[in-house]
Image: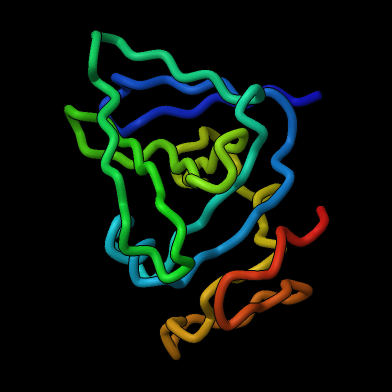
Length: 146
């Protein structure tokens, strides 16, 4: 089992991840675009017990309740209260899972090649296709297998 570390930009929130994600995906929905400030979110989904968050000071981890996702789900988007880095997403319909933004994970990102792309109807026309990746115009009916 692999152990990975991650952190926000200022290092105030550290993350330890045990094992591999059950899903690696890009999300092109407008909510992910706005929260990342990019054309898509690059995400890795884990079971909640695989991921541990440690704050360098009390109450540094802040959470925004996002009711705007195109999926219709309610998302708890957590971020560092000091530097603003997004560090976690928790889906209301899947409270036993955590989604970690790939960009905060330390080291090489090769192992995080997306298996799927969600909400491709919102994909920028200048974003290329990913070989061997499944694509969905909206949310998939269920998470694709690893």
